[in-house]
Every structure is written in structure tokens, then in C-alpha cells.
Image (cartoon, rainbow, N blue to C red; front, side):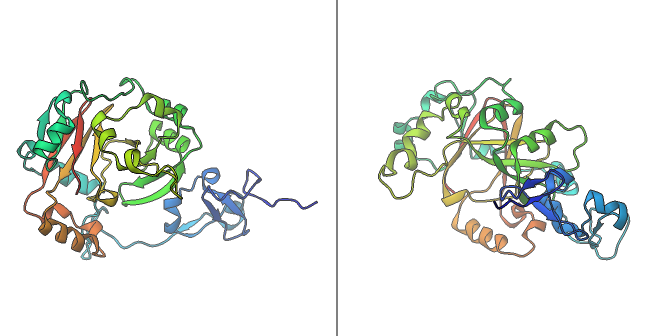
Length: 317
């Protein structure tokens, strides 16, 4: 009877859902979570030695990096600041932006109806200070990240953004929860795409009534379609302080809504004009766009702070 090959110090079979790294000495493969190597750190490793081989072959070595503006000390060859880095965040906090009061429409929840949108349109962001009247359901603010883990599942895979590098990698939700509660965080990590419409948490979160009325997926996706309904209705975002996500257009140019259950979230909003879209396309296709703050390319960028309990609706674009 054939046996299944096992790997790593845990001696388990290969699992395609888990990141693994090969030891350059013994050539065995190891789960990153077992040997303390994150997936997004792997490209920076030149030679990797597993815990056993470290004893005989020495520690792993990292690739040499060019000195940049984040480094201490001086250098004649200084690169632009990386978006999301600590230097970038500090500079961003020191800047002054036009207030979103100039472009955001404030409504009560009961005012945001189909009749309102048909009469006025949905061309500006809409801010609702209290969820009353929106026809939505949310858990209490005491519902915390460990509750998310319990309602979604600890082994669910999530895409995590390394804010400093503006790169993404995969990890299990329980690994992110451990990071979140850690008192010695070495990185700033951010989850922006935890879709939970098929999880237990779905039963305690109901999107605003106007969203359900407008949803193409919910209202117009054929029941007999070859492909099932895409899971794009309910996302949970989790981030620590300074979790910056660079400028982007939502998938498919969709309109979106955000509700802050705990903490606050800052948006930098740019009007979706034809001129700004052309500038965005040029910026996004630039090889060094992660070192260019897109707001510097346009006439105006508005700052909008969404506080706990508030809901923001952002139109397409």
C-alpha cells in the first residue's frame, strides 16, 4: 500500500492551501507557520536553512537591499518614500486635505430610499451618522476579532496586505488573530476581503435595505446560471492602526458601502471624472506607482473620517 509523503517538522502531508518553503541544505519542505516564516518574507530570503540545518549550516541569509529613505543614516542614492511605510504615514498625517463636507451628502437612514436616488441620483458619497432607518443589522460594538474567528472559522484562508510593502499574501484567519493580539507586531497587516456570506456570521449581519434593493447579484443573477452567484455581498475588514490601502477603483467599478463597527476609518476620496480616471490609469500602470502618492496627481483629494457607528455609501468610480 502506497504511503503519502510527509514534510516539515510537523510530519504532515503536503497541503496546497498552506505556504511552504524549501530548506537549501536538506531540501525538505516546511510550512511557513511551523518555522516562523511569513509568505511575504520569502522573496527577501537568499538562502533558507530549517531549524535543524541551522545547527550545522548556519542561519538563513537575507538578500542585500539598496538603502532607501526608510533607513537610518545617510545615502546619496535615496529612493522615494514607499506608500504605506512609517515615513509615508507620518507625512500623510501632517498633510491638510479639503474636507469631505464639500462633497458628502448627509442623510438620515430613513431618507435613503429608491425614491430619493431616482429623484436626486447617486453621484456623491452619502454619509449616514446612525444606522437607524437603514434596515440593516449589525452585532454590538463589543463583537470583536475573536468573535469573527468563532463565527467564520479559524482555518479560513484570508488575503492579508502588508501595509509597508503594499503586497498581499495568504494566511489563516487564526494566524491573523494571533498577530492582532500580539504585543510585539513587526508588521502592519490589514484584511480587506474576508467575504462571509456563506458563514455563520452572515446571520447576524444584514446589509442596508437600499443595498439589497440595488444589488445586481441578489436581484438579477439567474438561478439556473452555469456559474453560481458570486460571493461579493458581505465583507469584513480588519486592520490595526496605520493600515493604509493605496488608491483603487472597486472591482467592476461597483458602488460600495462601509459601516464602522469599532474604531474609525479614513477615506481619501477623488472625484471619478474622465480626467482623473486618465490620471489614475497612468499612475496605476507606472512601474513605481507604489512610491507615488496619487493624490498629488489630481486637483483635489478629500479626506473623510468615518467614525464608529457611521455608514458611508460611495458611488461607482
